[in-house]
Length: 192
Image (cartoon, rainbow, N blue to C red; front, side, top):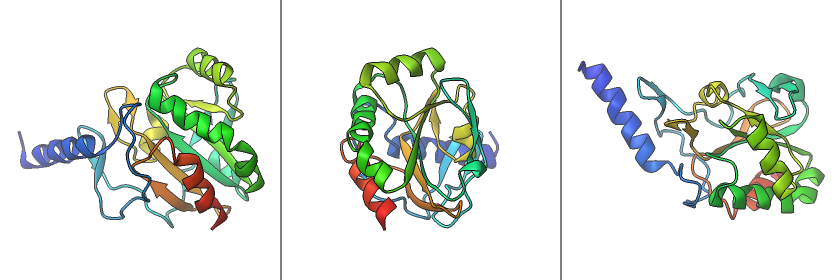
């Protein structure tokens, strides 16, 4: 193994060890440290995005078949939150928190998009079961996760969130998310 491949493997292992990808493992809701290195796949180390960076102009394929290009949301605050899997304990707590805080999030002018690797049928069932008022993004190939430099563990994205300001730049990032506190944390950042 070349030194570069070995380094990429070590970075990946460190990122996986420190990221909370299991849906029932809460972690802190601290904003992302700027110098932490993560990896989106086992072969390429990616430096995480940081506040002030332009948000990736990803195309979001929604559960209902519609597509939204992030650049079309300029002038709005947008939360893009990545979660491992529909209808699992931590992911459900996180989604319910956003649902329960929906009126306050809307009053703060925030659009919300949840992103995971499950397909439309799984997302629709999750939305229907928990009465989620926001769309879920289908990221079966991990393209949206890669655009945001979100590490993957197998076929599941790490739990990370990105608040995009009205100017299209990243306002806040959470590389570790406490599902129970996520909505309140995001609301406070959106109001700042």
